[in-house]
Length: 139
Image (cartoon, rainbow, N blue to C red):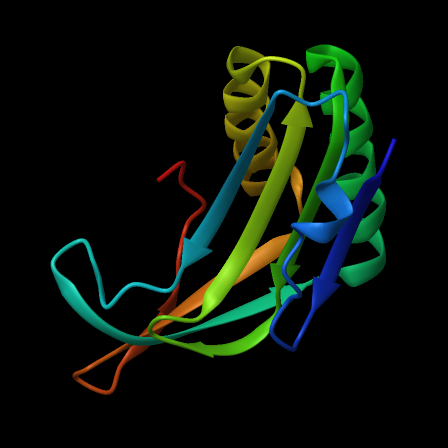
């Protein structure tokens, strides 16, 4: 079963080719983008910083847990680090399962676990020239 978690500074590759599986009846892909606002403030960029070794180890653990919990045929995820501009891809999750219910549930579970368990921190840069580190949240 394909399973891979990666942290990177460059644009992360499309995951579609690695997801091909004759057993899968459903594939769900989540792409998290840098948006131009947060809590009423105009955002111009984000910066992600990670404790890379721990993030990669824990990311792989999350994918392994997801594969078992949701009977997945494939699960892949990646998260960017560094300075990202509005519209950039920040995080990707792709899952393949026999049924859409498992695929949707697994994709949601994986992104929620990545956001809650990985040592990745986010700094927002605002149009007024200020910036601040943000608290983890589930949106």
